[in-house]
Image 1 (tube, rainbow, N blue to C red):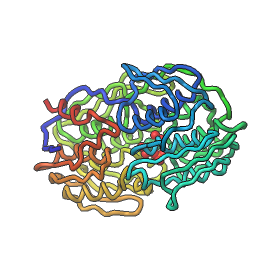
Image 2 (cartoon, rainbow, N blue to C red):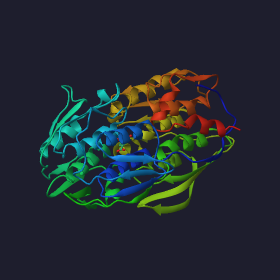
Image 3 (cartoon, rainbow, N blue to C red):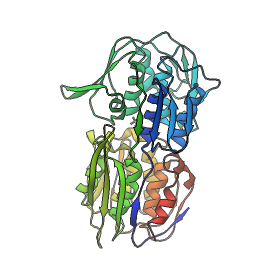
Image 4 (cartoon, rainbow, N blue to C red):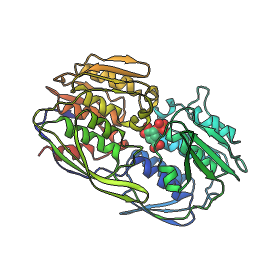
Length: 426
Ligand code: S3P
């Protein structure tokens, strides 16, 4: 994929359905007792991995204009005929493992080269405390072997690292106990699972407690998945750093545990408005309008501490915004970025350097001074969808040509990304 400087971007965008919510809706539907109809489910490689695993567990799934999932109830899954394949998807392996840990049959789950490098002890350790019989490979990575048990034990567990995947894994495992599981979060993370299941949550000593009653019946429902705010982020930044742009991004999920990057961009001076704000199925949804003037004058800042989990998936594209803003852009306390689909600290540092930025790398982040002009470069995506999309946007403001080494990796979360981008340039 070749990209070069554009004059402006204009248009209306309908990004695909939210990835985090789509995974969760599929898993919850599979455990329900009846037929679920899901509107705007994300059809992309990651969510197809979840659907394929569920099919392998005996769940009937049919896709026409909506997704139809026939729930099996908590105890109705069947032993898979083969090793479950989560592909590139951390959400699939971590959330599904919470369900598999409570089954009375053995299973094994693995994934692609990237997933087989990612840390799993963060779920293995608390699942074992619940009585799960689960083994990772020696270095704590997939494949995970999960052995059948009659039931799990409820626990009280404070998350050691802020992670919605770990939290959600334990919520699912909590359904397979005969008591109350309490999960304690010091730093909030995306809360879609507790919203979808309607769980009781409250604050205690400024920590969030999530309670899960074991054995609860999950009713079948009709779901609507809002458009993905993390996919929208590439366009929200593009509209903020490409002069004389106006972009309207429709029906975006605006859950406050996901909107931190919009606050960051506004603090940097971007002109972003939300219209048509409404609540659909317990999630905030709205249209995001981003406009830029003739001269872009964004100011840089430091991102660290409790905001990091809220903006974790948007750090690559925020770094692109920082690259052309005034002053020092710094990210700290983000060591878990090294454990994503790629080592995202390395991927950001390597590619910003290629585009002419003098970047300092830290174990938990990076820092640099913004520049007036980026240089076009050959971008290494490390097969990571968010790196490909972030640096494609950088290519639209750089001098000269930018080439993305493996643009196809965007199919993980946003198969139509390059078509949408092209339509905004006309
Ligand atoms: C996700 C949670 C985050 C995020 C990932 C999706 C989820 O991961 O980076 O892309 O759907 O729960 P962690 O929970 O590991 O931080």
